[in-house]
Image 1: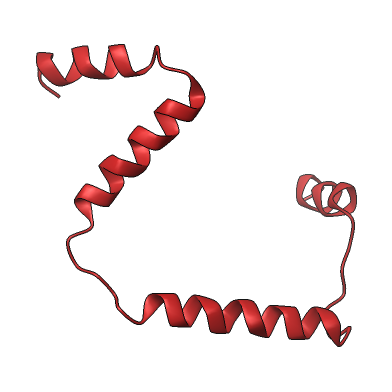
Image 2: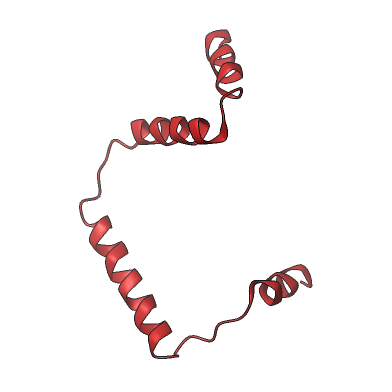
Amino acid sequence: MNADASKLLEEAMKLPPEARAAMAGSLLDSLDRAVDLDAEAQWEAEIARRLTDLDSSATHLIAWSEARRRILDR
């Protein structure tokens, strides 16, 4: 990273979290040159599938505290 970019980063880090998040999102968007036109449809289908699983009780849910305990016990 050159000096200009380092200075810009230093100044950006002084911004409130919401402003930093917006800036980060804009920077990431600027890197995404290839657009996957089917991605939105795929996400919608995945969300619908997960909601169907939840509604049909096909998915066994556990509390975050239990999931966290299981992760940390590994």
